[in-house]
Length: 312
Ligand code: CDT
Image (cartoon, rainbow, N blue to C red; front, side, top):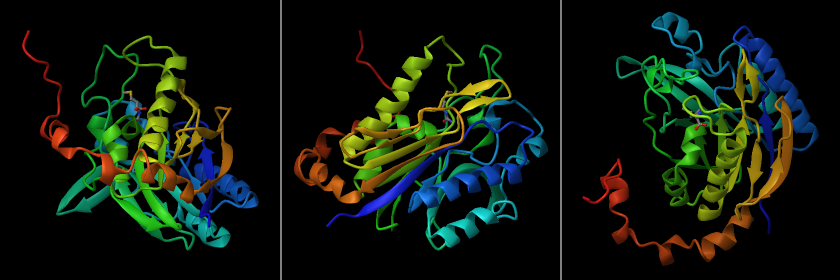
């Protein structure tokens, strides 16, 4: 018996600083309507899908920054997404900046949620691997201030049994780290959904856009193959106020193969029928963790953060 989830990867074109939340949500609703026409069970939106990628701008004015954050989910502006999910019986994944009062303090996270077909939030993830820097860096072509505006996520990498399978989430830079997928792989993950905002050029080097796209895909394809899981990677793409973000959104099978890929830098939906039972072969054979992993040799992975080469 197959367990097919029809997934729509909803790449979004640029969101300019001046674009309102409600205009962005209108664009997302149009993508949801398309996904419904194509029979999708789940639609995946990018990281920070409701706003421009604001960590590229430095400010010391937290009031200015907090305007990019959501203090409730759903909110008046995002409620239509939840209503559409219920109407279409289609789950969705959404990335957004979360401002929350917890344990008597204010916290800011780069967050993603999974909403089920009934329009209920069933899972929340907060980004663990925050890239960039915390202070203004005059040497960079542009800033990447995630370490300034967000705290490191405090929820780990859980998985959830929902949408008929074992689902996991991560966000953008997390996709480059093998630990991200392996922690979820050890919980039997069958589909990892993630969004990204990745500049087309490197702010610190002249790495080619082609190489950056290769790294985008090779990391997600390895994560999929080495854990025998589907990976859905969805970009916010195009030029946001003159800053180019790469596209290249993909749906990746548990074999590591790309089965669908976006071709534009705009709002674009790609769809694939993802059979969760296609994860079984890899999990039973070459990546049968119980049979083949050697934890006695992996201690450094959790004991050490930075690389320490042997003495000369
Ligand atoms: N949003 C995000 O995590 N972007 C990073 C860019 C890193 S460059 C400092 C990424 O890994 O794609």
